[in-house]
Image (cartoon, rainbow, N blue to C red; front, side):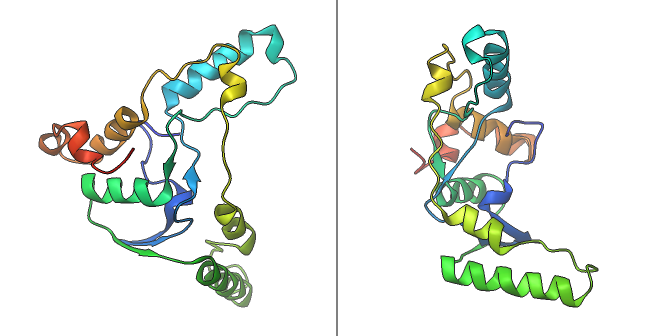
Length: 171
């Protein structure tokens, strides 16, 4: 979820270490859904007899890749140092973190596992056609939702910037 009430940098974007972001997933799509869009879809599914015993993907219509999202975040909120990691490097880092976690007998948190890393790199596509067949429509557009989430993290004077300036390069 993302909105002005939730942190705008999802875990699927990478592993944050202070002002450094180890960017995972590259061109993979983020399964983002603005909280208002999610609430509308949940209510719709809860009230529809056709939705009984069904599962739905509630994601916004305009998917954004990890790279696009992180770049927009860096332009809008803070200039993080972002280091994109390949799949091989991500898996190696995950294995090192798991071993360090085991060596410390759990005193050092396992911030990244090979299972989580592999899941981030599988290139999932999140299809919302099923929930749309019930009549769901996205209320808050993806650019507007990103602008809202990012604006909550920056001083008011900066949040007045137009959405198209913040999302330059994001389709």
